[in-house]
Length: 409
Image (tube, rainbow, N blue to C red; front, side, top):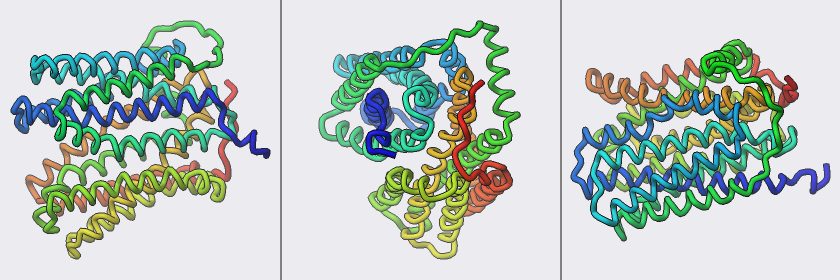
């Protein structure tokens, strides 16, 4: 294969830069919103908890409808509208902050609207990739998008916190809004190949069609189950880690921040390594790496019960970032390959919907910790990670020698 054939097309690069700007806008705003609620509005734990609920609720409410829209409409146009909505919501927050009119309810409502834009973008972006790149370049393209996401995930919260701390909340929301507007402009110039028109049916029929496809597909069904269980188990750990680290591991606030930052470092490392790993290993092996590494990471975290050292906790978080990012890249590629184009939006929406298990994991962790302590949560997480590893290892997905052929109908 020639060097020119290995290059990703210019249209994809426009999407990738838009993705970096959009993901960065999201992470800066997510970091700034609770800080503004606490520092400027005097919000307590209950208010900040409700604010986080408002910022995550669209993943449960909007993912499936967004998938239907992504299969009915121009995906580029839908992404432009979604990103413009996020930019407008961020600009509204900025105006309220600068005029000293911001209140907790307004912050929650506008944050909810911005998150709606995030969900629609997250559903439509993977669905548009197969129209922009050749089938044999799907994995490198997804690795590039995930690298952008991990960089934003790692640097965005720090940038948001620094801007709020140094210059006040206005600068943070101004930066987030500017990044969102850049993403909107890049998407507006994207050329998306036309898709064949298809007959419209009732929205419930279209949702049911997507659900039947995922639940009936031997490769996609175990992937979705694994993703749901992984997210639940991960947030069982996240619900209790900070107090556990301070009280059991004797860590300071800066130490906790450093250990949590290793999760992002693992994600970046995994995204950088992904193209080489996927060239050298069987496709199914790469699919298995994420869940197996997640299990290993949970065992490392649980070992701190008996060997209370921050180094083991840091290794656990690094592994939680490193392996699962390979899972995201490989399973996104798998989903794009086996799903017909006119179903891809709805099928992608179920993957986004699986992120709704995160509040479930956090609530489960809080309940178990209240009764049995944080140590019990770490052991519960191990059982969850074991379950998700067994589900994927028993599936035909891990026996794939190469990326499946693209679906034609």
